[in-house]
Length: 108
Image (cartoon, rainbow, N blue to C red; front, side):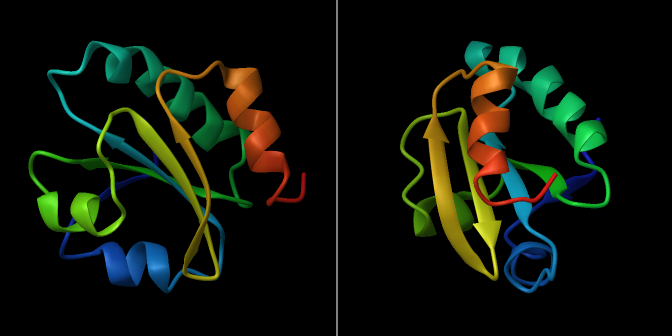
């Protein structure tokens, strides 16, 4: 399971104020592609342990944050560094594609 569950209430503290880069999986339980990407995100949490915080944000339960970052399609995976979104990936992605994008911003 991904490290954290993000919400409108904890997003500032857990994502934007994080000293560590953060990967946020914007998803919803009814989204079939989200269910495909979910286990990959869980694997990434293990692969990048100590270098990257990984968590999920349910867009149905947290519309304020999803709206603020313009999430119109899910799954959307967004990488935050120093409180700013630095990479956005929309749609189901392979683990290799996600790792390539993460590695741009996170040292291995």
